[in-house]
Image (cartoon, rainbow, N blue to C red; front, side):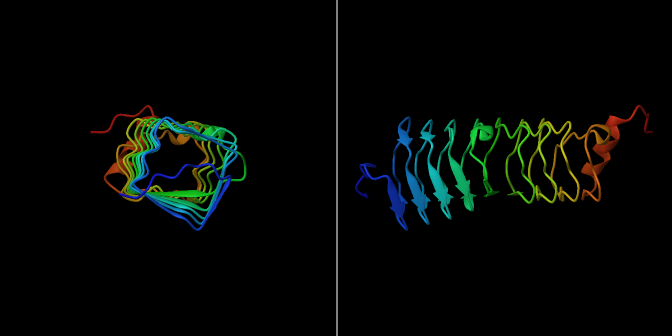
Length: 195
């Protein structure tokens, strides 16, 4: 078992953190550069005015964590549970990607998410309202009850995504990629009867 870090430093560079259990704690003004977090528990952890750059989180639990005033630059989340996170409190600019993550009940309201990669994720009941998702990739993700009203979906890739309910009349769409049979749900936004 790896010794638990004291987290007294304000800068951590090129460190590997394995099975760290730090739930319901707080980081204030801490910087992480090229760090790898694996199988760590950050449930309900508060990251306030922190900086993460070129870091990877793999198989971690970060549900209900908060990132108030924090910056995430070139961060990869893999197989990480991040349920109920309010991403709107991040400091700009931010760049991150999700692969095989659980992101249910999170908010990306009005965020700039062009080129976002969210592949093979559980993205159920997420607020994407008025977000810019142009050129984003949401392929193979479960988007059950996620809300896209007013969002920009130009060149967005929904290949093999499931359970989305997008009204084309309420979104900006150009060359958006969908696959059958899920694409038939796009007709729900029209007052038509299909037999």
